Length: 287
Length: 123
Image 1 (cartoon, rainbow over the protein chains, first blue to last red):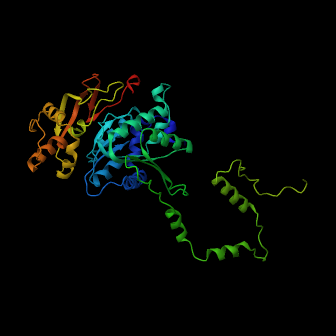
Image 2 (image 1 turned 180 degrees about the vertical axis):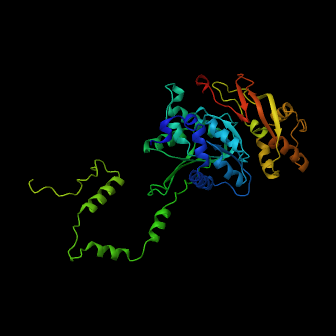
């Protein structure tokens, strides 16, 4: 199935059914929690000081619970009424104030209201135009969002957004608009080489010119998998390569071709042929 | 679930509504009191961000007149407790927020204000 943001606008996609599914799914809960902890880590707030945060796209309050736990006072905004209703209905005992708001329309918060902002899996929803009205175009909505957010934050402050971009162009668009709005900072990618664990965070600074963009987490996921393997794997592989008859196996067999093609695809090379049942097969002798 | 702490930060964000758009007036409000944890450090840190006049005004509109008209310089415990009550324990459940400048009405339902704008009101 295609990505949710391509199917319908958020307030419709997260209707009663979908928001219930989303909120009650333990896997979603786990992922959301992990990403919220990571986002808080990237926010790098001073310890032991009570802070006032903005949760953009708070949904049914999965991330809000964690903010409560960590002792922060927060305000949440979301565009899906069902998600917010879910939060109220469940009486998840969240402390934050909630707003039904389209972030693409901008915020009305007074300048310097918040010590920081987090947003989990939201920004990609701003990248689709729902109507042909000029205020509905993604650049306009992003501009409005980032400029009003920039003024709502204190100086210095940080904002961390986890999001799912589909292409580098999208990342480019978002970062360039954020820069125009006055933010510093950039993109942090966790586990860049892992398909499943890869997570993209946009880490923006207000003021605080000297701050470095934090580095993404690397390798952990893959290393774990390798540790599980038995040692002397190399030698064993070398032995497997030899046939029982003692002959060496064909080096450039089907496996080798598939491996190479996969490698090229990963490197982003264009025109790598598809894999099919003909891949690496011998031609008939007639030819 | 709108508390006065957020009301104190909220201005109208409709198109061309840039002056005199704060504070939003409270209309036909139903309030509920819910106890919250008292955190003096948070309040002390938050004091500079408060628009005092707007807060006193809003508190009056929801029927609480315990706050002094002028922002006191000394922050003793008793005052902080009062402030805590006004800022964090009064929840507005139903009603509306009205912009004093453009008259835009943001209805509050089930404690959630609807801040959505129509297409022609987006800045």
